[in-house]
Length: 267
Image (cartoon, rainbow, N blue to C red; front, side, top):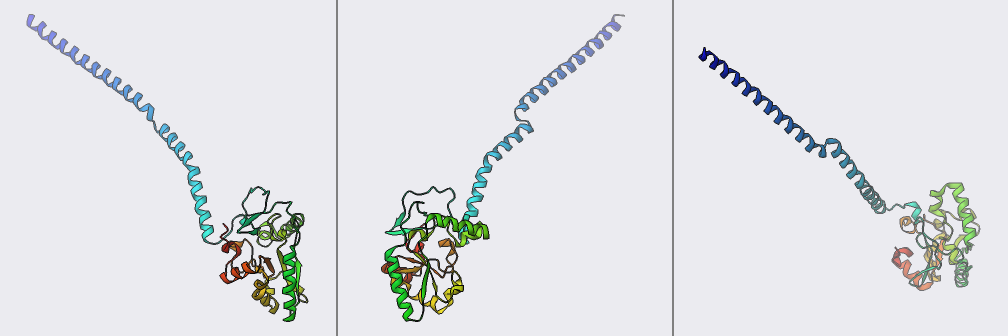
């Protein structure tokens, strides 16, 4: 009987040990499980995604800026103009711009709205001398448009925009304040009797137009907007538009085969 009780007691104690061991293992496992969960909460997939989205959002303007800079460089390399060649938002100057003593009026350097010198007398005298010599050669030249005020240029430009749209108008007409005609030194020239060719490229192909471009520098005038230079001057080829700069400079510019912007290194 004693031996029987001893065997049963051994079996009973063994079962208790097994149950206790299982409970301890379970407790430890549960503890480890919750510890791991708490540690991972700081870097859940949602948090990582939010962080990546935030980083991408912060970097986006830089990427866009790079794209814009790249596009601008490509356009400049291709010789195209952006915004018609103008600097958007440029404030009106209080004084006219002179570079190497030359009065400049172009799409980068506007004139004050109250700059109103009228037609330049020296330029008019030079034109009359040139017209006299042209008449001796068989051509009657006419300066059909010279000085224009800021207000008149504004009216003229708005009329062209209404007719052809802003983008097209910017290729052949200056915005108010940006016109060379406001300097009083620009002369639009044509031939009397050929008025239908005034303000046309075809005028440059006529005998009178060829004589003019060949001899204008001797009187101080340069062809201001030559063919193939639109990306530099900002304007399409104008066979009729001549700018008075004085004989010495005119001859140098013609000999260089450069535009006024190129010759004076105007940026």
